[in-house]
Length: 380
Length: 229
Image 1: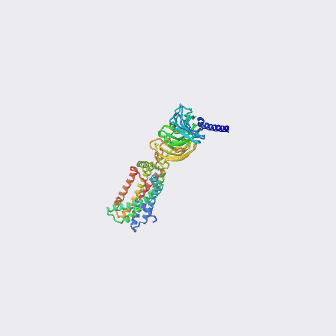
Image 2 (image 1 turned 90 degrees about the vertical axis):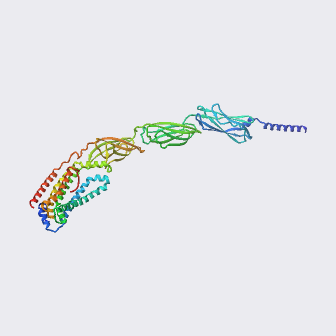
């Protein structure tokens, strides 16, 4: 019996010791309950000098609470702008906790791994490297289509593509157009978010008033950091290679009925359609009825139409024939053609002369009347 | 009625002497004057075509055709009033200075008979006008509201050789036939107002010569004009 009591006591002590041992287990085991569940870096890819936010979620997977004494992030290259978490907190069993750090990437392009450090109150710590990528690839602006030349007051269309070559989306993308006397339409273009490897086509018109430069500026944000891409296009005036080209031919100028009548053909020798073709006379002539102006209308390339205009011209041998027309966008153009006019070889210069019958009538009438008068006086 | 016209034109003294024995009547003179007025209206209508461009520029196509009719009506009544009533009135008034007797109706009647040569002259003038009309180049007026354009229009129009020539021939024909009418009027007024030949010649020739000189002056020296007889 005595031996049995001793054995029972020994067993009790042994259990107690086992329980105590279990309760006083290694602090490293408690720390092992805490794991990093997610890491979010915004922006996903930094520009050099960008400021961003790193958000780290940790979760306690163990059955007991874990006390955290300090949470911080550090790196020899990446600057951490926010303070570390120095207040002791406890993460309950099965709970999670979020830590947010503001960093600034004042580093050359590359991949960096600042360390997230979690120090536990009792013992142990957690180290977790966070990947930060730094790239300096800006948004790409490609000019897809533009006129060869521009004209003062003429509206021309320009097509561009804005592409995102980065590995992260950029937001608040706005395209602005700047330049002296360019009158852009629309004045700006809002794209919004541009995802990686995505491109957006934009068409806009400009109506330059003078030769200048057009700046196409794309403003966007990488996270909270504003950035700009810029492309400059020269706006030089000149004749378009494809524009409509109304040529006058078969011109005949005649004077009659007190006015000049000019007839001819107008042919579109250009590669684009000429709309609203109107012919009139310019310097040296004064338009008169019935054809003060002649409306031809639309002329397709290689098409022609006949026209007739009437005018007066004094003390000149040459007049200007104006051909006004518009392109497909309604931009007005004018072409001037000098035309030599003949002198007024009308009846004004060649007197009809008194016709013989008229003279005969007058003479016979005078003779008969004279005879009648003489007779009437003789026979009174 | 038979043989009236040769008697009037060749033996006016006898013709008007016989008329004075008959009651005053404006029937035949009225017919003569209306025939003359119709010829004048036709000439005026043709003349209006010359100004068609000007009127069209000023008031449009509709007004241009309306103007031709208006011109004809004016020519019709102008002939009656000027050539018959006015001339008869002048003869009547001037003959009063020579103590002429006789009613105005008789003067009007004989003045109407005396218009026969003028009407013959009008018909000839109308034929001459038809000959010259296609040759007359009417200038085009560029802007009816521009005084300079109107002045240029008138200047070019009046300088047109065909128009000038027609005006001069018209004046000569008018003068020749007016002289014939004056001859008839002398005899007519002599009988209508019981005047001596000398006084009748003065009464008739004073207004006729003035009118003739004015017509020839305007045609050859002054500003030409156009219109029916």
